Image 1 (cartoon, rainbow, N blue to C red):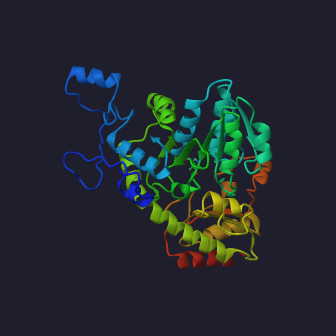
Image 2: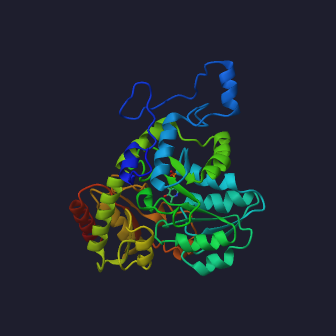
Image 3: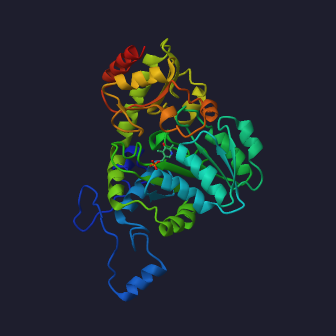
Length: 394
Ligand SMILES: *Cc1c(COP(=O)(O)O)cnc(C)c1O
C-alpha cells in the first residue's frame, strides 16, 4: 500500500494479504492455529513473532490483520486492534490502560453500556471517574487535574447528537498528561479526523457503519503502535475479546463500500432534516448538519458533514412518538444504526429505559424523542414515509 493513496483507494486495497492462490477477494482464514515447520520454528515464533507470523487466532489472524491494517490506513492511525464487539473495544481500551488509583474524566452523555463500564466496572476496581457535560469546556477544565490518566467521550452523543470539541478537550487533557480516548461511532470513520484533531485513541463499534448491513458485531481500537501492541494487545489476547476471522472478513468487505454508503446516507439525512425543519408538529429537529444545530460551526470544522443519524422530538410526547413509529412502513423499528436499512428507535423506552427520569430529562431524552438512522433507500421514499407517519401520529 502506498502512503500517497487517497482514502477510497486505501479502503479497497489497504492491508491486502494474498495467499499462494493470488485470490482477488480477500480470503477468510477460518483457522484458530498455524502449523510450524519445526519445534525450533515454534519456539522462535513464541519468542518473537514476525510482522506477518501468527500463533493463535485470539492473538491475531491474517484476515483480522487485513481488517486492522485497512481501518488503520483509513483513520490515519499507526495501528489497530480488532475486537469481538464495540463494547469489547471500549472496555478493552480503558481496562488495558487503567489501574487502581487512576483518575478518569468522562462526558456524561454516553451509550448505556459505556456508562456502565465507567460508572460500575472501573470504579469497582478502584478507578476514580468524574463525569462532566461534554459540551462545556469549563467543566472539562475544572475536572481534569495533574495526573488525570485519561479522558473519554463520544464525539457525537447518542441520542441527542451533542458534539464534543475534540481539539479543545485534547488540549486540556494533554496539558495534564492525560490520554484522550474517543468513541467515534456517530462521526463514522469516513468523516473522522479525530487523530489529527488530538485524539490519542479512537474506538469504533464496527457493528454500525463498518458492517453497515446489520450482520455481525465487531469493534476496533486505533492508536499508536506502542499503545496498540504494548498496552491493548497483551490485555485483549489474554482476556479473549478478539475479533473472529469471519467477522473480520465481513468488516473488511464493509470497508470497501463504507465511503459510498456513509456519504449517500448522510446526503439523505441532510435532506430529511431540511424537509422536517420547522414542522409545527416537531418540538425539535436535531441534526448536526443543520445550520440550526447549536454547534453547527464546530460540526463543520470537526467533521464537515452531519452524519447519518438525526433525532426528532414529537410534540405529542410518547403517545405521538409510538403512533409515529407504528405508522412507518419503510423505516423499521430496531436499535442498531448505520445500517443500509433506515431504523427508528424510541430511546426513552428502549436504549435509555434504565436511566432514572431526572437523568433522562437532563440528557434531553424526552418522551417525544425518536432517533432516526438513515439508510440507503430512495430519499424521496423515506421523506414520504416519514410525512405519512407524522400525519398518522397527529
Ligand atoms: C453501538 C455502540 C457501542 C457498542 O457497540 P457494540 O458493537 O454493540 O458492542 C458503543 N458506543 C456507541 C456510541 C455505540 O453506538
